[in-house]
Length: 200
Image (cartoon, rainbow, N blue to C red):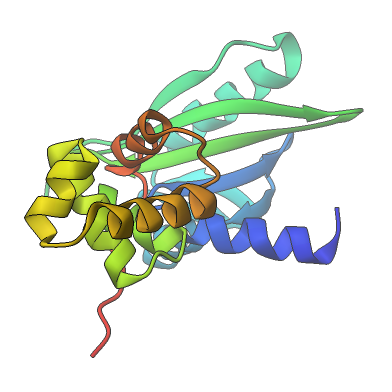
């Protein structure tokens, strides 16, 4: 993989609100996105011990180790793990483990999220992830609510050709060919993208 593609992927993963960890078969940490690094820095609900990702206690660490071993030994299906139970002012945390194979290399991807996390970042997250302009973001926001370009034009007091022009740029930036595909991206992004940073 080229250095440029690796940088693009790393930047994309850093925009995702879920913690993403790539682990070797032995549990060594190969990669963590921004959310994952924040969890490690906090030491909850996972920790890094001598380069190995572990849980916050012996039982959680053992459950993670067994899940990794099972993936390696028998190619077990994707697994969900409880990494922390809510309490003492902290939310619960769940993990989802999936095997990744490329040639003779086997690794696992662990996605971790806090339970009960707000899920309202769809439009803003997509706008941030795909570098939409403020005007394009407004069109997208109203499209999600209205789902009709003439209604979007009426709501924003813009001409229909102007809205269609914005829509063509949005589709181009997101790699979508249809409005329905774009709306699916927004819906899927409701829980995955960080709330964008506000400009002061």
